[in-house]
Image 1 (cartoon, rainbow, N blue to C red):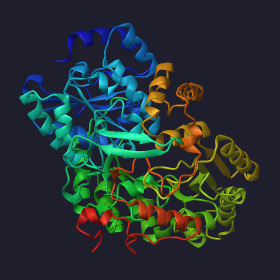
Image 2 (image 1 turned 90 degrees about the vertical axis):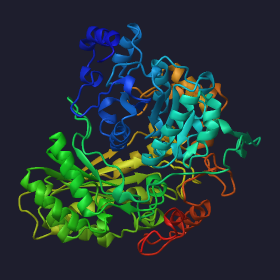
Image 3 (image 1 turned 180 degrees about the vertical axis):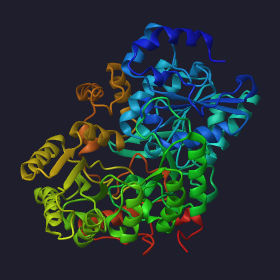
Length: 616
């Protein structure tokens, strides 16, 4: 039964909020258990709105994984919108789990997934709404234990003041090991300190309170020193047998619209490409893929249990699956029969074949999306995109002759060594694709072409070859955006770009150290939360917080780092060596490319996780 007290209060306020379905629970597929029959209650917190969190595959996997155990009850928790937050405070409603309506402050474990840096203040806000002290040092009890994982945990230092421990890498195995240890600690009455000292011995667990950080007078890190038996380096966890890893046969199906409201199957993890700006491409190494039969079974199970009529193939690069054409052919056989639409992610231009187009055309009616990332060949070599202009136009020819008249292109702006000529190259490439369409005698007569250019601002990220590079200043990014706009001449081209302010803050937090903890705290106290949403973002509050702490955001975002500098994350091991990142950075400055992992091993170090060879 839902918590009666909170349920009655919700009945009084939900008609006053814009999206009441975000706060009611009870969806198809949600798991209800008797709290008296479980040993551990886990609050899985997504520090963003319901429609974003409910779209996230990692949450779906770990929610089902934990609830598959009879001794664990995992519930979902999302950040409330401002209107709901105000009413919760006015009516003394603490942050609660959607399945039980019980306050999460009474749970055993509270876990946050860190998908992007601009969610950090929402972590603090959710702890506060739960009625808990936001700082870990002010939560002396073992329960509730506050943990966090996800891609941003590869540099968790800005959040170290608030989180008891971090999970590095993939969570399917380590989450269960941590729960098993917690059960022992709870039964035997351990202190929080004893539990953390034992937890740090589990591979993939990082306990920040067991490390002391000292700084040089110039603000760079002097040393990171472990204590109380903590390892000097903490290695990430990976799933080695990815084909047999747990995968849910059912999802929670929302009553309301979410960002990605469809079934999702995970095709592969990792990436072979080595694009030098792409953090995910390095921190998820090595590449591991599921076989075709496993993927088809996953898809059938999900569509049968949820009723979804669309299924998406999810990965960093689905077309790099070694049997992608066989996979699509086999999936089309049953998705066509069941009237299920098959959705594909962004496709690479260098392995987009006629056979792949023929399969895609059966299941995809909208335009095609590709990511050249840069407008000139020199810049594509700098970032190791390993795509040339001939491949781009051959792909466009295949698409246009196959009946497509809309192409979306993803680019980045502010990349290392970029010049205004490279910026002009983005619009120039788009214009030449438009001209190319009209030059084809085999194009569809009477139909106009549309080329949409989406341009993100480059943010240097940890564990990439560009972690050493300065980010363009706000003024530089605005100047480049304006210049790109001035080069646009055709109405056939649609131009979009990311906000420079949020990209700048993302750059500050991505490479931040522990001193940013106080900045986070002060920014949150000023009202910052849900910072990735434009209507909630207040750069002036962040600047005030930085000034009050005596820190310069340019030190984190706009400063070039020496190869010998100790990075805030150097004591964390994501199986990609710093020597490799330095070599790749040097090659970038020489406009040199590196072959993909299937063609030639570049010696990144990830092979140590799979017995010495990534590929047979």
